[in-house]
Length: 468
Image 1 (cartoon, helix red, strand yellow):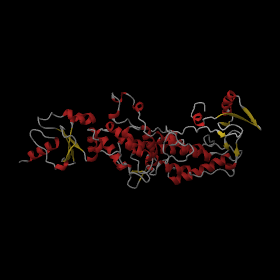
Image 2: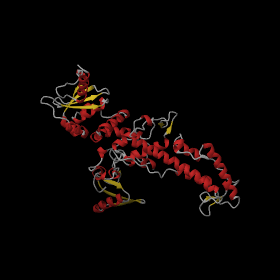
Image 3: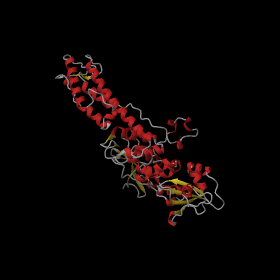
Image 4: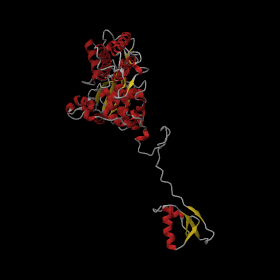
């Protein structure tokens, strides 16, 4: 056997049986039957091209579940009579592949009800490679609801990938806005987050990583711009952005503030040369806190002078103004997200703007807007919730309690016969009993309280009537 024959056999083993060539034999335990009557063999290939597992499935089910695999099958030649379709996938995640094929054949008892977070991320990576997201969304709902409360917790930064792949854009914007200002570069120049994930080694989609860096750069640049604008304004001789309105020593006050700022900026390394965002290794949030904590000096006594006649408060507000401007720097940066995966786009591709086809997260009470205003789960639940409780974790939903039954004071008057009963009522109850008493024509007065005597009243039947 010459070298060309060996190479040809290796190629045909990888691509499928053609011209009578057969695949490399596999162990019986590596041949997994999903559909005994299947007409398609899906081989999961390793990096060297050998089949680690072979699945016998129905081609009709696979075509319906995964459009990408349908296109591969449509492009393949029809098998010879007695043989089966062959589909080779370069895939080492055998567990997720088996879940996909079991769901495609309605074998729900073979798949887990919920996934841990690492398994959820693995499924999302599989969906990214094979475009199976739409098919899996109904099955993933329970797992998504389980891990959504961990959205901004350390160690769960790969919600980035989950939200992007599922097109939960409100959730994705929340995560991007948080991670972009907390990520920093370590000694190996990898992008990491505090007590969390190494983003550079997480194999995130390029559009997500580019967006994180863009948002971080924009925030830092906005802070640097505010710092240098403050220097320019205080150096002008007549500050307009940071004016001192004290009745004396205004120019001296501006000079003192300018000097303290220049010294602090130099210590931070942002003066006299303005650095780029890539030169600042710390996170944007940490850098912002360093700048906001600068102690800006003013003329002696100016910081204690108040003038509320024009509603401005401090007559020398340079310190407060500077901190407010730095705090707001970068907040107006648009959290732009790249278009969603093509498989989830409407018919016609990008002809319809992707902003109009958003999908919302399944648990609305975990959304950042509700957390921002202090809403709890009970505020969006349809069941009755105790509004006085401080915690919802131990609450067990149930039916709303009905309005308590009205009570009647009953006693038997010794002056009347045993089959008669005296009922004391107030307000509406008195009117009701009064009407019945008038029909009987019996009324008695006892002290200051009016007592109506009637024949025996069946209280149990009365409380159940609509009159009560």
